[in-house]
Length: 457
Image (cartoon, rainbow, N blue to C red; front, top):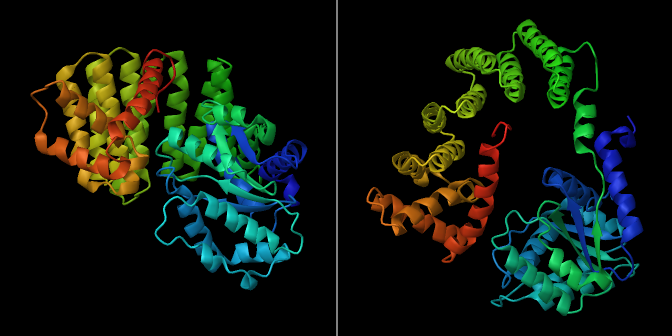
């Protein structure tokens, strides 16, 4: 198949055309403004253009370097770049194709030696690299997708510092922004004369559907995926009759394949789509049948069914929540959290206990709030640094800290001390201020979910 027949390749090609039309000679700062769920498309665009298969005239160098603060971000990029030069065969091929002899470049002289603020050194390194190209008119794009950003304010400050150093006209910074957030809007307004904001209607859902339902129409897995999409359409169109048609067909396919995970997925998807119609007797019957299938699979040694069973517990909690049965909903979230602990899926456990806490907080159940937070914090020692940062742990630690500051007598001091220690190590001494901002946004979104008819995930 020609690559441009691939739905994802077609969309990356569309992104490339937008770039070519919007990025001018004077552009030094570029952002892709995409939906949050389209982050992987930004990543794919950068990775492709940084590979030997890139088609843009620019030479793209792509970094996942984590941002921990403005003071040392450039230093971290330089170190990552040197590491890539030494170890990345694909990057060397890309550079070679651009007409550059990597062995003739003394990049080691840019290795930081004690200095933290290396903004000018990063610019000098890029310019040195560009000058040694056979065609030194090729712009170099430093594309960024940090694994984490501890402070958007600090990241904006770093961008501003870099721009004030008068980046070379042949050097560009590229980053991702989300339509829902517009995190870098102010800095792009400040440098509107030399920046470009790119957007593209990627229709990612349509692309994924094309991929998922492509192939042999007689393949039961292709048929099953078609059922999933048709159920989604029926739910969006408020067509309960068609939802039942495709839901039952999905279950039939699952039974026919004798694939327990496929069958359980049919039950949970069918039940989830029925939430919008508030037919909770049917919802609960489907969930109960699906849970039994998962439990039998787990008893037979099927490890992948464990996270699926946890999803069933979450949906049971949501079903009771929608029916106004708060205690039952709380208990199912707790069951989800404890089962996650038993399965050694600690991040999922943190999420479940956090949902139990939020429900208790929303319904003004003080004892249950404390219990949920403490059950979550018992997982503190089990979490890696990445788990802690990428889970809902920060919200849990913040809430427990707030209970302590309010003088709650049920706070356990050793749990509080351990969570504060881990948060300080991961976020710094000002972690409370950082989480406060995240917490306000999260809480607003969650309360909106509790008041809506949407199934919380």
